[in-house]
Length: 199
Image (cartoon, rainbow, N blue to C red; front, side, top):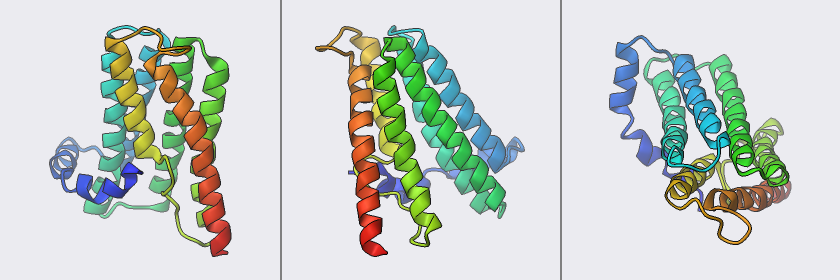
């Protein structure tokens, strides 16, 4: 189910963006910062509550995901890949994830749901890096990878802009947080079990 499997396909479309970043003198770390800025801006819009502005937030969420691909492609194209750049990218990704979930939860006044969602998101990513730390390679699989999360939040944010009413206890964006909470924790457990079997 994870969209991370489509990364090689997406990378074929990155050429013009990599070239544009090179033209303006933006390095991989700069692109990572732009991606993070998109996430923070989206979080600010989400935090204001459901409105047509959620369409802008949805576009910013998707831009965050796209620029997150561009920074790696740019690093490889310019031979600037480094451990420091990889560390910065992962740190900014985690802060971006937290910002998006917290912004959405604040806008919906659903902080308990936001806590469940953000812990699921963080534990999913933690499992991936912890599995790598024990020598099994980086784990991107599972029910809900980062690309899936961004696609879900972006789509749900855009849908909530057009239909801001509750469907049961939550708006469409609220239901996306429910999915992040449940699938996030299940993905973390799925990664753990898979790694445990490989040890």
